Image (tube, rainbow, N blue to C red; front, side):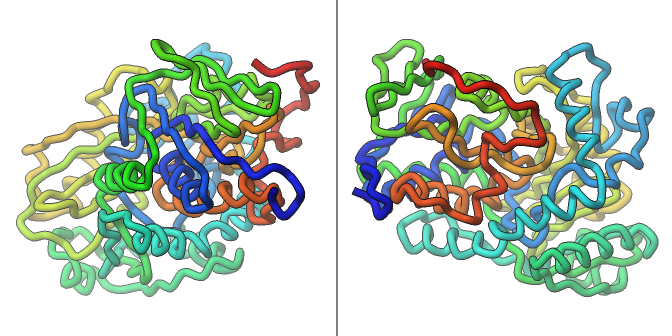
Length: 433
């Protein structure tokens, strides 16, 4: 029995072998739950594989922000824009965009930022605990983490945002430095960089390597990881949960957690969740560099992120609102190259490898979906947008606490998957499954 008098679960099925799903599985194991993880493709097969690998809770902010509206309609319809929305008649995308635009206000951004701050503050401690518990892939401190600009005017927007983050209670230490100081800290910056912000206490990792290491840790603790098995349904009845997969026997457990990233809405809608989850696709590639920088660099005006991984530099960017299974668009890679070329020096941008597109799960209000659904024993963990790596560990820690104790976790209240206000209310289903 839990502290609240409810029956403590002994077994769980986690659907999704990305960062959020595997972190949740790890923390459930930490509480003594026997776990099976199942994924439609493989470990780190989605957005966990090719992203920038930043673990930067100081910068984990809501995606809907007033600055997005300044792009204008003409800009977002261009394939070279940092934020790209193709012309479409897709009613799901139109609904998502309408909700997204409604949340691009100062007041709603501040409210969402305050909610995320509760996760951001304790995110680093969750990674430290997982490292002590056997997750082997290293988390590296960024010395330094630079945000670089072509002019002081370009830097003002991020300085204002960082000030607002501090006002929301999330402490982030930064200083303005000259272009010369920035190049001394990161020799790959070109002489076009006039100023930079140096952010302290930020970290990064190899995202694919970290998630695979996390899967290994789950297996070493006795967990099972099943890949290549798509989940068709989740049925809750009789005090247990059945996860129905294609080409296999149903997986039965006391509880189930859906952490399927950009595909979260496919099953969540059947469980009383009406917050749409839209794929926000990002692109990346890797290139050789003359020198290996000591940490990541971000070009905020261009929305381009650079991370040293091994002997290469991963360059990532773009936010493309399309279906997660849409074809790879080479125009988006060219847009990143064109944006980055004037800003980098000693980087072979034409010697690209590992060209990749992955779908990040985005919600209209910029807040993830973490908590119980209307189906007894079925929980959601997803919708983190660009911050699944950064917030995956703390999401797993807090959700596992909710599941195993039955107690409400105050930090998760704003992320209730059944939250009202952002969407129209619906009647509770008579039965689920």
